[in-house]
Length: 147
Ligand code: ZNH
Image (tube, helix red, strand yellow):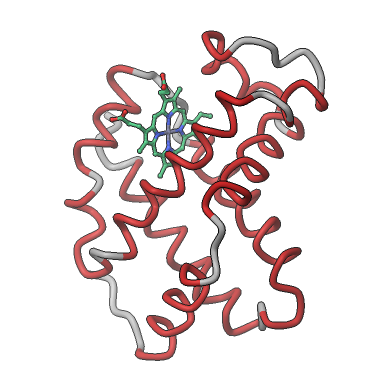
């Protein structure tokens, strides 16, 4: 089981409490689709992804960014059982959506970059370490049902 220190819990809660889900969700998902263009293959039904500007202005991408962050909130609310919390989502991504699990890491790195840019110096190295740990547990849980 993953252990969390009080400081790690406090840092992660603080980051989420300041998070604008719509803005950060849209920014991190579109960043992922732009810098790792192969991740676009899963969003064929989302309309125009023709170039960076189209991706950043695509309302379905924006909405899905919010959905992903709401999904992350479930991990925040179940810090001591992230693996089971994501069992169903992991099956969905593997068996139905066929998302390559390497992409979870790519998206989580984009999220860290967007949050770091927004929080500036308040995103201290300690915060960053706590948040990276949180995301790596999420990525591992989402990848659990792939076999
Ligand atoms: Zn995902 C979906 C979350 C990543 C792709 N997602 C989804 C959902 C959620 C999520 C919550 C919804 C579900 C239902 O409906 O039930 N994701 C998530 C998270 C993450 C993710 C948390 C991490 C962090 N995804 C991802 C990636 C990708 C994806 C990386 C690729 C690239 N998803 C997806 C898709 C879908 C989803 C495609 C479906 C959409 C629609 O709408 O159709």
